Amino acid sequence: MTDTKYIYNKEFSVRDYECDLQGVVNNANYLHYLEHARHEFLISKGISFSGFHEKGIDLIVTRVEIVYKYPLRSHDRFVVRLSLLKEGNVRLVFLQDIFRLPDEKLIVKAKTTSAAVREGKPIRPVEIFEAINNH
Image (cartoon, rainbow, N blue to C red):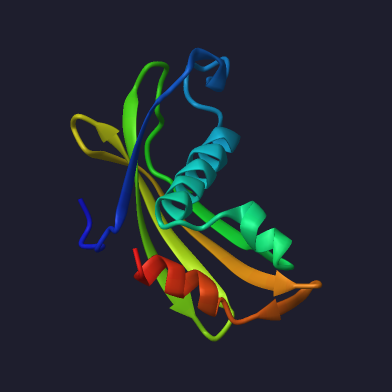
């Protein structure tokens, strides 16, 4: 494990159709795992994407950096661990690591930068941080 302070964990299992001809998870599927974990984290904090959208606020991904360390294979169990940082006044940064279970082998290290926008213009994600910190 790394020394990152994680605030959320989400477990998954690899499904057969997520693998390529080499028998390993296709690289694009890791984006799905990471996104699903971020969404589940926000939902666990009472943050509704549709609720924010109705207020005119949209949460968008602006950058994703992934380092692939080791492949997952069909039926592997794994956990996505997440920590959250505020970068500047308008960006939220999700640091996410994927570990195979039960041996805790590091599979992926990822950094996803996101922003909140209203009518296409960046805004301070104050409501989002308040919602996260109040749960």
